[in-house]
Image (cartoon, rainbow, N blue to C red):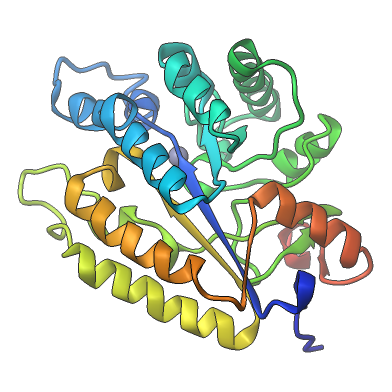
Length: 281
Ligand SMILES: [Zn+2]
């Protein structure tokens, strides 16, 4: 069945800006069983919580955009001032594991521990609150969906099964997609391995083209960036230009992921339901 998704106030499509505030955590997770004395990637990633985050917050203030930040517990413990600044800006804060764990590499008990510890670490800085979930590395498991519901997490934002909100096993899903992630265009760790980072104008042109496509079909344009990647000067400049263009488009409903999930739950209670694993598992 094909149904066009409708948005509040007759808007043609929705837009949201999300930040996966990873800092060093993916590196710490990846090397947890094989510690190394190499500093390069750690310092490259620390640029995010030291400088990148503040540039992104300032840009969001200038644009008057409220964004959705997903923060691993260990980063909230190491950089509480950055988390406070995010909260002070009125942005949404959501869960992103404790040590940026890939949930498909964990037992159900370990996933639960990562959710609980991640939430505790954030609440220590910003106080108790309901928070949505974005899985580290955008991987999910049936167990994880069950656990989110058991812990009262109101939505997930890690999957790509539609380009507008839908339901997985009764939980609202606010979908991401790789084309709208800065990492695939810029992530580079030296050693001449992998592709060199792309020109920021090429990246934001690609994002704008995808925005036009999403607008045509009435979907959700959910962009995801990382402070250690997109906090670099030329990338911020290009990003701000793109977001200004989208912010000035009268046919776009701007919202946080939390607001989008709540809208979906209210308007589409009976539609766009999918079982875990799409019925294949
Ligand atoms: Zn992440």
